[in-house]
Structure formats: structure tokens, C-alpha cells
Length: 152
Image 1 (spheres, rainbow, N blue to C red):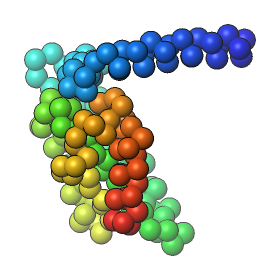
Image 2 (cartoon, one colour; image 1 turned 90 degrees about the vertical axis):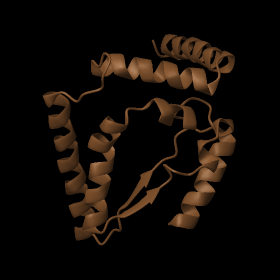
Image 3 (tube, rainbow, N blue to C red; image 1 turned 180 degrees about the vertical axis):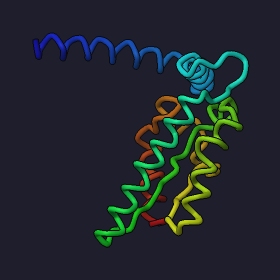
């Protein structure tokens, strides 16, 4: 069974890598957003459902418990907002980002939590640093890690 699973994974990875190599990051970004919209049940407009809002609040509660744990154990929590390629950022619904990300980031700032934000990093938006719309390639990882270490 283990060997069959390994072979299946290898074949799937081969097809995914082949798709990635034949498509540009721009095409993959648009395709990714289309799949995300379908996954979240969004048609023309992206609107959070009550269930999705409830899930966000549950995630926030888990986050707060982790912050409490850090504080109790004298650990310094650092939240990192990773870079995104420019094409993906162009197709992401801004209202959803405000509701799902930026309002929570604002709460973190108010709580005094260190946030390292690479969202507006123009260099790391460049498609030359991406293997997929959200995964950095080896060069991108090196630049990101170097910059993250300097920020921390």
C-alpha cells in the first residue's frame, strides 16, 4: 500500500508540475481565484456567508489562545503576512480581504503584537519569485527568508 501511494503521489506531482511549467503565473493566478470562488460558493460577487463569518471568529479565538500561551510562557508572538504575486493580488476581492484579514491585523496592531507585513513588498510581488501563485520558488524563498530575518 505504501509503495502504491508513493507512486500515485509521484504521478500527480508530475502532472501538477507539468501544468505549472506550461502556464504563466498570471494564468495560474486567475485560475486559482476561479477555483477559490467556486470552493467558497461565490458567483459574481464575493460575500461571506454566516458560516464563513462564524469560522473566522472561531479562528480568531484560537489565535487569541495562542497569544495567551505565548504571553504566559514569555514567548514573543510574531505574525507574518507573506508576499503574494501581483497577479493574484489583482484578482483577490478587496472587500473580502478587508473582512477576513485586514480587520484582524488591525486588532493585532492594537494589541501590540508584532506584525511583519510583506503584502506591499514590490520586489516579492514579481512573478520571477513564484513556482505557483502562492508558493515561492527557491530564489523567492531565499529573498523572503533573508528579509524576514532582518525584520525580526
